[in-house]
Length: 175
Image 1 (tube, rainbow, N blue to C red):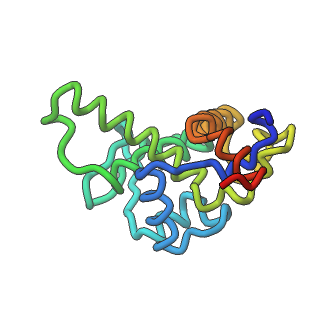
Image 2: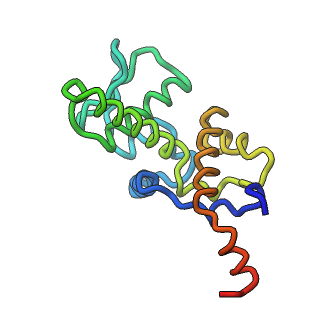
């Protein structure tokens, strides 16, 4: 049995961060891909988003600032990145060490990926499809590159947790 034949969700083990992001979305009524629109997230979480003439940033519990004039995918990407900071981080990056800032930025990138293509909605994807990446992009309204990144993370996770011998034993009822 190759990786392409696996029931991905059966072998997939979400990370703690991924579960936390999904649980947060669910608790705010974000249960369908249509709920992932930035305006709906702003309303569900009651997060203030302001557009200003400086780089995008999160201002703690006050809200999110997005660079004035950005649109489309850049807007969504910046919104979800800053929303991830707003949701999961505290502290002022101006007062942090370079390593602390880098760690927060990496976490925010990971969290935004989990927020845009959440674990609790993965059952909508046919992972056995040859057009799986296109399907992910269509379902979640994300660019192909983002869909590829998420699928790669899912595949790596499945490969890491897949125990071929356990499946064979279970299939042969030797348990």
